[in-house]
Length: 621
Image (tube, rainbow, N blue to C red; front, side, top):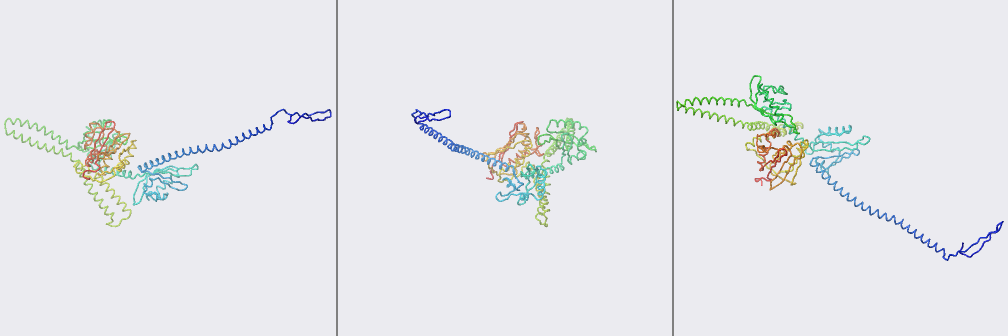
């Protein structure tokens, strides 16, 4: 088919002839137009495809940029939030470490690089900007006597691959000594090669010094009981004797060894033994305290009448582990009572005789009146003699304190002279030992003065000294000291302070003594829960509340709670360091400082002890 004219092409073959005819088409439209249209369409489609695929990359790029921008903003928000949270956590951690006097360190064993927390610089009293932290510098701050022990402990922990916990001393500038509790653990790689060591240290100087005070106080207690003019004994929960003092041995006529265990029962008069054992078993099962009268019968047959009092000893969990008691010699009183009874009987006989004589003589009546008057005078003398016995306690405390304080002043004075080297030079070891004697003497003198305070309070002669001090720091120090005791019983000490700065003009030592007494009482008589210490300032008065969730106090006992030498019936007595005078002394101290102390309590639910003090006493304004 062709667009040209018709024609035929002859094709000759051997067997004939073929012809190829070409016939022109009859279409009027030129095919070139179709090809042009088709080419245009193909061009447009190609251009559209090129635009689509080429523009797609740009559109995807724009979309990616938009998403990246959104993600960047989100990441920025997350970063800012995380940074604030981390900063807050670091601040809280620093505060917690500062309050607990706790610091931490990290040693990279590959690079030997040591890093400290902020509290480490405070504990070691170093400037973070000037002090270069290193393992060697840390070792040099350790007391020379403890340095080898600390190094060996650390080396052994790496060799044995076990953590350690030790206590040692720091010797800082100006020869200041600090006691440190340190715990350390080392991390090892898969080949058991040490990589890093992590450690925490805590300043426990206050706790160690308190423990030393308690140990010395225990020695003082043993010394005082050994020389006390009353018999003192300790009995365990099984009724076995574990301790008697010299006066008990003197009254019973038994040796210390013979009195131990069940041997102490042999000192009792045979007629009193069965009754005493029955009363003792009853007291151990129910009553918080034991009180009776009995007789000692010595080997020589001597009879001694005794008035015995004992009270339960409780551990930190309020479990009974024994009794402590005293026995007073009342033989003279019993003898006097017998004499009075005999006199009474004789007097009745005398009255009968004289009455008969009155019927015969007026003179006999006058003689009878004279005799009665004489006997009344004798009875009054006996009454005065009996009343004077109540004053023996204060006289004993004052005399013993004075007799002990006089030689202690001499000891302190002479050690001071020796330290001044007026009698000749001293070597370092001699100076160290004499300083220890002087410090121990000063501490013992302080304890003796505390004992003397009891008699001074009763005589109204206790003096206080006023000075300005940070009350919240004293409160924090007291809470830190009692925290281990509270934690052992699962009790939380929660301070609630309305003011960040409380400056009090008062006697700092006496105020801390009251805080320690009230909070330690709250811990002793609480088995669990929270002890809240609230501090407020109202009308220029400092108001402190110690609120516990303990056993509480009966309403009938609250009125005699602050009375000296009065013991409560519900077992609240004889648990305050063995004196039973803590609340009485606290009340007198607070009133002496111009304040008041009150208590609100519900039996079985807890107590609220509140005391108020003027921020500035009237005579100090």
